[in-house]
Image (cartoon, rainbow, N blue to C red; front, side):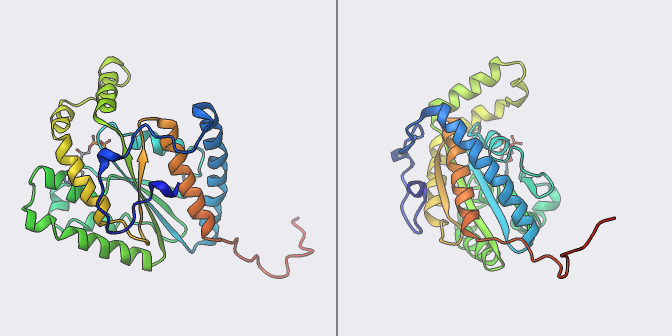
Length: 267
Ligand code: ADP
C-alpha cells in the first residue's frame, strides 16, 4: 500500500491519481471482501492488545469530499471491533463555543488516550479546507495553519500517538452518482442536502485545497494516504491493510500477569 503514501513536502496532483485504481490486487471485489474480513479479525485482536497494553494511542483521520465514503469505511473497517476501545469523533461546523476558542481546541480534547483508538470523521483539516474555500478566515490566517497542524501532530506523535491520515479519493462523476442514489432511495434521502449541490460546484477549489493539505502536511510521524475510493471494497481494503500493518509494527505485548499465579485455584 506504499504507493498511496504521500511523501513529505511533495506537490500533489489529484487529477493524476486514479480513483478507480485497484492496485496490484487481482482478485476483484469478491476476493477483496474476503481479504477485508481476514484483516478485520486481525484488527479485532490488535485492538484488544492495544487496550491491554495501555501504552500506545492511535489516531485515524478520515477526510473526503461529500459522499466520499467516510461513514461506510468506518462501518466496514471497524466492523466487530470492540466498541469499548474505539471511538469516533465527528467534526461538524463549529459551535459558538468552539468558535470562541482556537481551532485546535475542540480537536485536542478528542485525541486518543493510552490504549485507545480514535477515528476522526472530518478533523482540524476542515480549517484549511472548507474554511479556505469559503473564505471563512483571511488567507493570512489559514496559510499559517499548515505549520501549526504539523507541530500539533508532532506533539501528539511525540506523546505516543500513532497517526494515520486517509483522504478518500472519488471523482466528480462518482459523486454525481452517489448524490443521485441518495435522491432516488427513500432510505437514503435523509442524507441528501441541497447544500451539497452548492459544495459540488466548488469541486475544483476543494481539489486545490486538498492538494495543498496532502502535500504540506504529510509527515513520517503523521502520513497521509490517498485512497482510491470509487470502489468501496478497495477503499476499505487499503485502509484495513495500512491499519493492520501499522499496528503490527508497534510490536505490542500483553502486560505481564501477576506473579505466583501458577497453582491458583478459583473456587
Ligand atoms: P458529514 O458530511 O461529515 O457526514 P455533515 O453532513 O453534518 O457530516 O457535514 C459536516 C459539515 O461541517 C461539513 O459541511 C463540513 O465542511 C462542516 N465543517 C466541519 N468542520 C468545519 C469547520 N472547522 N468550519 C466550518 N465548517 C466545518
